[in-house]
Length: 131
Image (cartoon, rainbow, N blue to C red; front, side, top):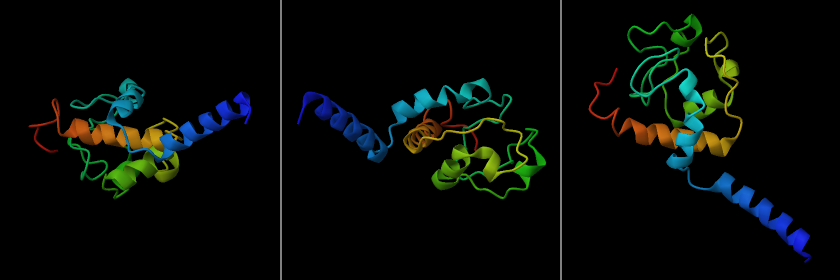
């Protein structure tokens, strides 16, 4: 195999390996940086806080002004529902106030979800009352 073809094959293999890799919370924190314009872990901003996200009913953080669509969605946040929502927020919850187009890359979504799970068990989320 020529060196050009070998490099192309190696690059394709590396991309495929990333797609099948175990989710990485460190990479997920880098993806979360995109969310920081509207969200924070422990406080509400333009979007609601993410501490206590897993197991929480969508649209239920006390005092946060959710869209009616989100309040009526009946979504309970877990890895599967987050993955679907993060892929296409506006398609999953038409009428949501969240205008972000989503995270199209499945590996990046998995990494982001891994980060959110890890963050939920660590400061500043640990020890906070689940809301």
